[in-house]
Image (tube, rainbow, N blue to C red; front, side):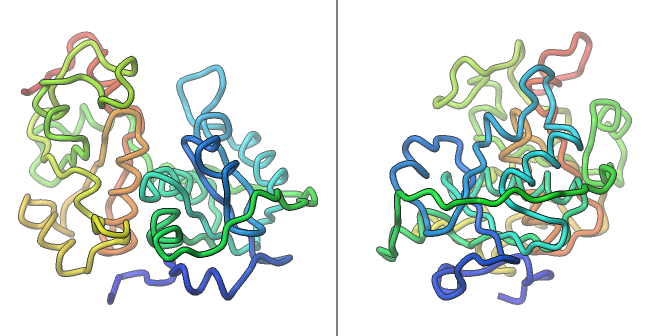
Length: 281
């Protein structure tokens, strides 16, 4: 596919022929593990549950460095492990966890292209047996803040010609017709709409409907460059709470090779709830 960083992707056939071992860890990332991992998963895969494992249980934030180290140790991962992520929702949550891995400095991390959807379409084998996972010791790097945008970054970027906002939500969320996806009606903001001058490029436009794999470089370039999202710009991606936008962040940074891409994980639930923030519809 001539991606800028092809090393961050593996296909389902590669995974089926290269099972987990001491140095290679396979991790399924699910929003809904009851209807995913627990019903069947790739042999040897451990589970990271997006809602329970990656979000801090008290604060509105991702887990901190210490919590990340504990999660890695629980999954038998070391700093030198090769980690392959895959999951439900066309790897939407796997991409979010990929972003968190990179935020804490893990180098050898990949995504299985197509995730559960493609694996199941190919009728590849699942198991319900959970593998024994020996505990490891993990030392994370300091957070790479260059991958993350905060509220003040977005406020400061408003009106700048060198910065472009990518709103990856559905068109109805972007227009303000609805304030949350139909699947999560309670997780909404006080105001509908979008950040001023943002471009609406839904995250799912980067994948093929048939099997959930990423589109070609040519298709992806057309998808983003036609909306003014070009490699020379400082790009900030956002959605509702930062998970869908991490998928677009992955596409722009690793598949297209954009050098300046950040994920605003506060996203619309933060922006749309802040008193005084400007909103467009």
